[in-house]
Length: 453
Ligand SMILES: [Zn+2]
Image (cartoon, rainbow, N blue to C red; front, top):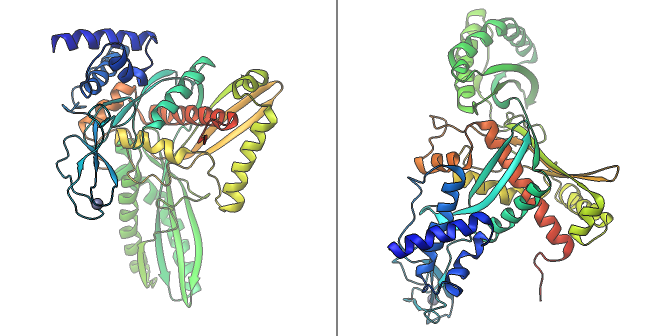
């Protein structure tokens, strides 16, 4: 173990100086240090952890490193299917046919990494994914720790971050506020009754808004910035949607907004009753406020964008292709998304990149389908190329509270990454996404992505 300690220190130093690429630590241990498999997996993970601790000045206290952090291969003697199970997993039954699995492969080849660049974690496998420099609305270097399923991602992101850093870092623009929305609905038997109700609501609104803000939104300095009225009907039933839009500088505010609107409903019910306005039903009207529905009208979450500038000749050299090839690559993606899939705005691979950050940090929301909406853009300005990504609806409250408790492991990961506020979370999410897109685009243009042989 003392030998290992020295080894870990030596390797951590080499990773830090760039002498050993972090994802090559395992093979360096086997080939140059003659460490036996599968012992090298733990030493490699420890070395990467130590390097991160030294770079950030933070210590890992909660992110566990299990004794046997690797996969073992098994084979079903009945149907010949090959299985990869974590070493501590005692359930070695084939889920196809129920047979007992048998060890697969020679002793030196039986073991595989949990994920590339693994640094710890039991319920999630955490990968180190380099550092990214951001400037603009936030000036900071984030140390990326992501929780991926497949392993390739962390290397792709690491390489992308390296490229973006060399170009001066990601320039980020972050929305001042994160938006939330909750919608109140009323159903009436006639249009006349509905119109009477709308004027009562409009009269009550100034004092109602103030009360909602004081009682429910002030805790996180939230405010109602807009109230929208929309009329709809269904076979003799007349609806009114009263949608309350709120915004918060440093919180997500969705739960607080919902509670405030629930309070408004009680107040307006009383008001209608006292003024003799007959309504059939009052309710929180789902659907209209886009609750986790990816829509161009979605006003939830925070806008963030990240971009990088590079001279066109330098980009052509990097991509080994003319700039027109990049334009065609963007256009084929855009048409595929907008015309073929009919989606309003969602190009690129953010849906694969951004969840790795959410999974690792456990930051709200748990479902990702709105927050992972992304648009990749490319602009030409003189002899410069601007390559950027924008995330229009990133939902985030980087604390731990009743809106979404975050376990200490994930809070530690946030801290080691350098994320303290929801704006910093947004900056890191956009910069990591930019790094991934930038690198994957280069690989596609060079024909090196999914390259068959
Ligand atoms: Zn089987």
